Amino acid sequence: MNTATTQTSPSILDTSRIVLAHGGGGQLTDQLISQVILPRLGNPTLNELDDAAILNDQIALTIDSYVVDPWQFPGGDIGRLAVCGTVNDLAVSGAKPLGIALSLILTEGFAKRDLQTILDSIGLAAKQANVQIVTGDTKVIPGNGIFITTAGVGLRDPQCKISSMHIKPGDKIIINRPIAEHGLTVMLAREMPDMMSVLKTDASPLNGLIENLLNKVQGVHFLRDATRSGIAGVTTDIATNTGYHVMLNEPDIPVDPHVQHAADMLGLDVLEVANEGVVVAVVDPAHTDHAVKIMRQHTYGKQSCIIGEIQNIRDGICEITTVIGGRRVVHKPYGEQLPRIC
Image (cartoon, rainbow, N blue to C red; front, side, top):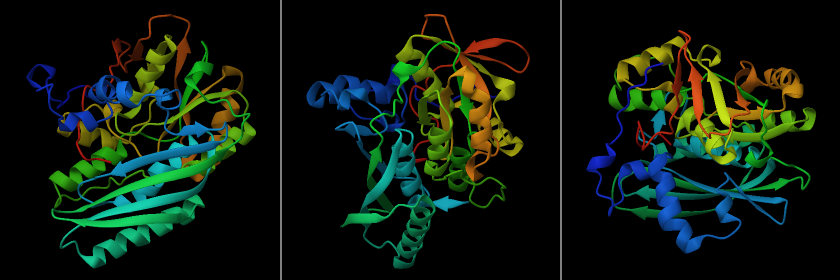
């Protein structure tokens, strides 16, 4: 896995201004939230910083904005991305999606036929996720492109206990499919639009897979979809939040050869590239094999596998064993390798 990055150096940032990297889901995003947002808006619910807020122990609420460029790419578009991202944020919180609110910000001159394509994609993705678009808003501004904000509401069993606080030593880390396909698909579509590529986005509604897992497997302690900062972002957060040592095994992490080739060509680390159809599950070791079996029964989980474990070492570090037997520390991305991927 190539470890080169294209991130902005911390030393040249104007700390008084917002930069693109603040929206990348990495360390700069964490700083913006902890130093600027939470001191002004923080409360017990918001301070959890989960993918969805849980209200009254059962109502899940999430919101996200999508600014991907280009708006259409192999295998999907901004509409599919918006529905899948919202549904997945609810699902990893243990909630069943009930409805989605859709806000469209259109720019003057945007083609109606392109809007129709996006709306059709939204409708199809919502049907696949068994959720409806129940309310919305539309605005038009000067500029170029389209921006979408979605808010999702879901219902969670009050007995559901999914949180990093339940993670313990010995737990195994499972993912459901190969990584890094979405980010590299969008990057190639943006920078090399005339190049023929077999890559396509992995954007998928994972609520069905996750519902099966939670209904049929005991000992699921934590779930998170590995979006903007990739697998690296999720696993380093686990290490930081629990204080335990997280050990990943590089040979076990599935990466399509075409994806790895594209990452090597662009100088990117696949661990840090965005996904839109990858869920990270932390499961009790006594139930891990059963969890993998159940996940593999679902369309979006046929390549599910164990990629690491939680070790009983109190250092809050994430490491990876490389294909040649060495070890290196995995860091959360500072900013964003690939801007406007989601």
